[in-house]
Image 1: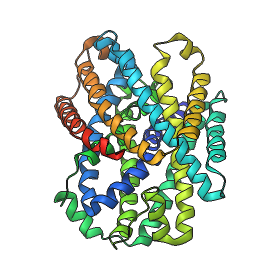
Image 2: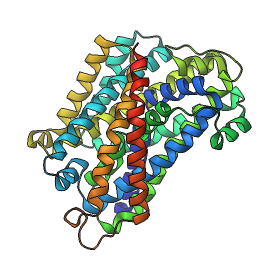
Image 3: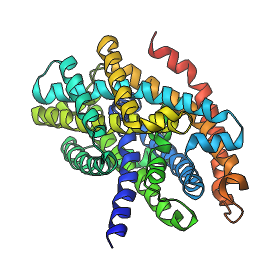
Length: 397
């Protein structure tokens, strides 16, 4: 009974690790910015990116679960040496995201307490570091992501109700949008399942030894729960911001999410924003560091032996770069888009592995429907990623 309870905790933890890795400050900044730009049409972007995210997650989690191999080891089995390329790309994307995550935590703490953002960044980093100094870092991470994930849903839901969004207009635009923005789709896809995020929950299951064909139903449930939690938060946040921008009010370009909360729910809304941003950032700091380093552990023995030390180092360096670089809002949109560009490479690798008996074994038969839909996601995300490059250049012009 105790083992079953522990397994359930890990499955929930894996789902929330994936979801809260996605629900970072970049997630909030992207959602607020694109809702401000596209209004109700952003609902279509949420629909398309979520369908693609479900397909991508189920393909990846199933292959990782049945093989018991991490993403980089799957890649090396498909094409020798490819695992090193994938690990480098994922760790680089995770690092870019983590700089924004630390910045988001600093901003959240600044809003709640009034602390200077540089001091707030150091405090936020210390919280993340403390988790990885513990021998039970995995179970602490599971509990933290669940508690903070639930808190974010409740707080954003409260603001969404207060802003009185045009729900019927949003529903209409979900299937018949007035504007279609490829950069928004690839950014959301990258921010939800791109880069390290798509592997975060699967790697957590492998670390907890919940693998093999017999565990596939539970891995499926965990993957679906993870995407669903991220979707609920995305919809609530979209509605909260839409309620503000639909009145014609312009958001602060430097802090689109924060200004939406403040306009929508007054000073209490601004404090709620600070708490949500802090919670989102802390869980993402932990998720990005844990998963990025897990991509290096089987490729480099020293990382495997000193995983927690490397994870702490990852958080420290991210914090130092943020303190000297700044400008997290544009950086987070850039990181989301780069993760979207990494997605077709990593997903294509997993799809090839799904039919490779040296990876999944002789008995496992990967769903042909998921396989075909997965390749469609690869092609669409690759096309959108390439076409969005011109939009990315405009961010910094």
